[in-house]
Image (cartoon, rainbow over all chains, first blue to last red; front, side, top):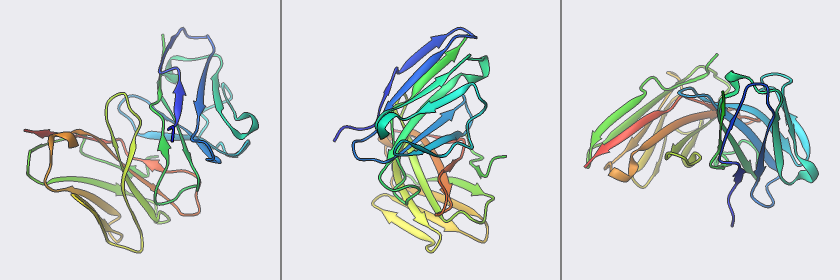
Length: 115
Length: 112
């Protein structure tokens, strides 16, 4: 079984530019999550999809962030325009059941650096 | 405001000894607690979990203890091995919730 795949693994962009991160969850996982870790800090929730619907987007920092999940398969997270404080590692995760004792399967993350 | 705290950023232990990683939480609604292990350039990997109805869960060399009255949990690794060197994250969730709340991680180094 393929794991959660994230692309790109690294991205360096200038302040004010746009970046789109992509996540391919494990096939059959209806639940897809985005998390972010700013250097040295906790891994923080951004949002949760169930199939193509946003179940909870309470963690999205502001309206420069837009997440989509077309057809309930892969998801994209777009940052436009990027600011310096958006730098960090963005993790995607998926699960069959939300919030269980087995947690999620995480991807390897996209390291975003805004300069 | 952080609801899950790991106050030790790092820990070094000799191979074969016990590693004890600690985690505190503030939200009494949390009833699922997980530990994740993370190697550099990889995503966190699920290690072990415990629900609030238990105070101990064991899986091989890994044991998680939960003290609900103190809102504290700990992960014991016995015996520690060099391959255990990684960052360990504590995470908590309410069973009715959508998200896990993570700590800042503890970097464990097991010295051969």
